[in-house]
Length: 425
Image (cartoon, rainbow, N blue to C red):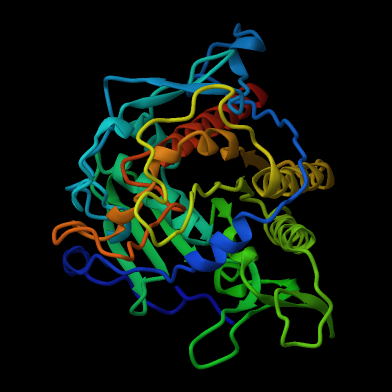
């Protein structure tokens, strides 16, 4: 399938501003709840992301001053709060508008991730825009990719307002914004498996179909026009699915009515990431303009008890250090993603203009059970009292919220890359 953006001229920016979407992507909380509490084995790994501390640090900086392990730290109180207003930023998906939907507690907005061995600077919108001047950044993946994208748009909008120049279909799964001030474009591509997939529907099979040896052309067709890509997948691999590779069916996950072998989704996730990163290396890594790629690691859910009851994710503070351990499915999903990033880096070491990192946010996200919309995925859910069934979102993140920290680390990776380019040049 060709690019969703191809052969579509940008829409009128002023009209687009009036038509900013307020739609919901499909959620599957029952499936998430069922799978989330499977007794998976414990595996833990540690990965270090190196980043510089400024856009152009002086050449006398030591290694300690230009590197940081952002996976090791804790959440500390921060009186400054977020960079943007969750009630006025127009690019937030309706389900993450926690403040506008009446969430009464504001304490979750006043925490900051503090690495143990270094400092994570506050996000600098102007620096981010300057580093990506004349470039195209794409977020590709599932609704967590969209969540991170919308956080970034809100932070950048604090210094420069973007124009929505493209949107596709009623569900707006493919969108693009343009920052005229820096000739910078930022897009989101809905691709919950990164590889080719057919999503289950009310009119078709009640399971997904994944083709693990083919990258999803709905985003890959635009690859040569993308300078930086942020990939994010995970939660959709918990859903029932049939897996294809070549001309054969590998098996399936949770499909008791089908005559297929049950296959664990960890290996399937690994195959999907491997296929995707290989496609990036093969198609983009050999081009003169190069590409920067990041894989945002798995973001844990925080369901407690029944997903449709009051209090499914009702905590109002982060976990304290040592109170929560990264284990089970959360650890396994993260480990697969980090290992495949490291393997792809080894396979592409000869490519000068291909840069790849894991944006390792799993642990810092695990420690924030207070950051989800919960019942405030809907406006004023208790205006008429507490109903017997209360739908909760304990997967996505309020905006503003902990997901903003992901983009702070993203900026630090970009600073490191910029520093290395200057030093090598």
